[in-house]
Image (tube, rainbow, N blue to C red):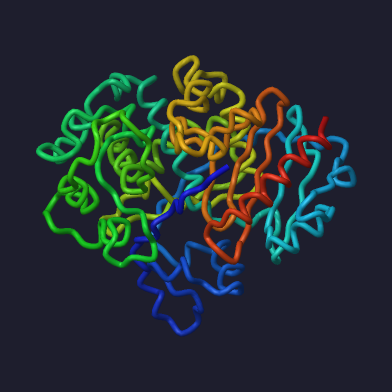
Length: 391
């Protein structure tokens, strides 16, 4: 499955970053960390960026153990067969969790990580943000996906987002022109939201309002981290609550996440809707279980009936000329051929679900590159091998 570079790290470094005892540069430098900095930093982002806490509740959703499948997993890559341990070492995996029929059948850690360590999500957070859109619709804060974005973020009026719906925003089909090139310092993703330019207006909104329109809204998919941040701002404005608070109230506490999570903030102090939560490996797995279970928590329906199925189905082709790249849902990557949907973040973060197999795979990594065809193909080989072993 194709993955576009998916996480602008335009985050305000914490004040302590200048302290002599930290080896972890913040801001965009996170994208160029050394392997050792990755290993240290991805599990301690609270030392690198400002954040809000997503509070857990009093109970924990159980993940009982099942019969291990580890010895059955044989990963075929480049004409060779790798064990789970071989794969984890070769691809710098810090955590691998497999939940089959509600039971943990594989759980391993690497890179000096343990079960209590959080790990950054990069763009896996996008899929959480879109789920909060569903919760806000269920709660009546957002009328429907057909509502104009400017109803909830009126500061966007007068630009390319006039007439764009909430549904078009969460399928990345707004039609606004956007450059997601991380190697270009003049790209939109490099420049968006760097400083507050309008008092009282989030700098991401200020920047996005000035974007030109490229195509008619709804006409095609175009990846934009800026738009996922807009969705986070939209949810906060609609609910009147910080994203971290709303996530805690609707999912984290009632579903039974094991530990508090943290959610990185932008320069204006708002959580990044498109990036950078940190949570334990098992809580990544629980996100997968929440979606697989239809969006229920604490005996209550959190998202509208049918929302999770609709969010994880194909709404738009990523690239019609390359069907192998898969499709896109509501900030979920969809692989119709494999029968899977995924939340994906750069440097090897993913929650992969095969709903017909009742199978959830959570993986955290510290890849040497943000995203390459080879790395993605290797992960696809791993998930295919796990699926086969779990049958």
